[in-house]
Length: 455
Image (cartoon, rainbow, N blue to C red; front, side, top):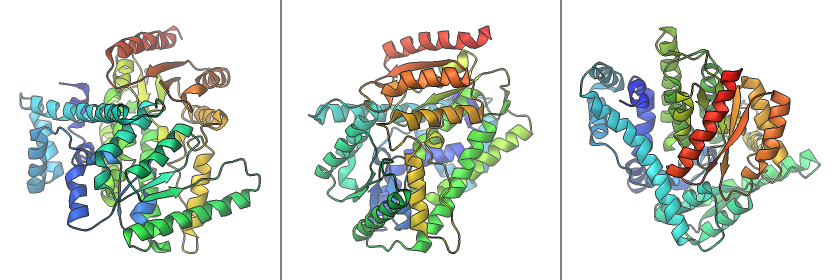
């Protein structure tokens, strides 16, 4: 049985999030064809405006047909009859018999099918593009649109300071005519009030375009309602990162914990297209983790160095956390927190939600996500996060053909080594599952982890 399967069957919330991710195609097709909801593609974990327009945000890969183990489908049928809690309790009993081999296959199929689909989208993009080479992240997203553009009604895009991303965004017009652009002003404008005013006007323009596409009104109340839900989601997410991931006792082994964080990184892009359901699952997840810790169910990790691995949102080798686990460490994935997307948006009776959202986006832009041309903001965000969470080591994920983030590595390495006094290394990544690269990564990480044994 895999490390992941052995632990995760007792987390009904994880099974729900994984199932909702994998079965997105059926859910989204029903929403569009039967309920006449508009499907608006999103990325980077910014679905709020789409939800506020009573429409469905979708990270396009979820429109793909994944390989789903037949037992997972049967599991869903059982939950419809008995409920998730009873079903997962039955799985907990079944773990002691051969029947659990089926469960192992189910959970492994989630990881493998997701990775296979990302690679498939990457290959689709590289075969159809004629422009310059792009990184794995941009290529895989571009492949999603080549594959699924007919199932999408519009695309909402947030400008970032990556030239290749912006070129790719412009080229999407060929696939999806309805392009809703939300430009975020650069930090070069000295007058902050002027920057805020520009940001507010850009949001209003995007909302107007969204209303034209969806036929729905985005009101102050609908914005505030979604911000409240989003704030609660972010609160639970940060509880996992700021409290549980830095504790000396985990509710599962570190490899499983990293898998859960990876699942959250992917699913946070669009909240699995159902904000309320996602909120409930996040609530259950935190409660399940805390309950296991309270009962002493899990693993003592006090002797394992805490390793931050970032960035992963534009592609990474998922074997990393298991390699580090076997070498005596524990990995956390925290991109959205580092880049400011887990910050809450203030909501009050007399507040202006557009202005509050404008401040949220501007603050995120100053943490690195939206200003990649300037490495300083991104490096400062890494350094601050490492200090706040008392990270023991940092592994920087350096993507091939990335002309914005990956070229920051040397500066990142020098600053963090000097300021934080912790080991820092990098790993190279081109595509998921490349054997030669995985072997090289293992060698690099082995040398990196030996530094902790010397201490």
